[in-house]
Length: 51
Image (cartoon, rainbow, N blue to C red; front, side, top):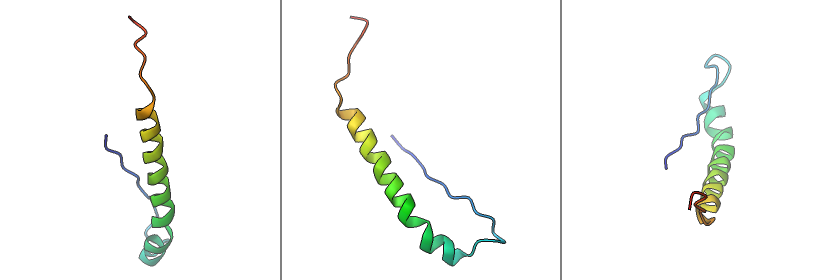
């Protein structure tokens, strides 16, 4: 599975310094939480309801 997280910002209103300083920490936390959720789902036994 592959996923992407994106950031949108208006170039005239947001400096590169602000983007590189303020956005990576919450994006990294969100990516970690998504990864943990995917791992939890993968660890749940799958049930075949058609058998």
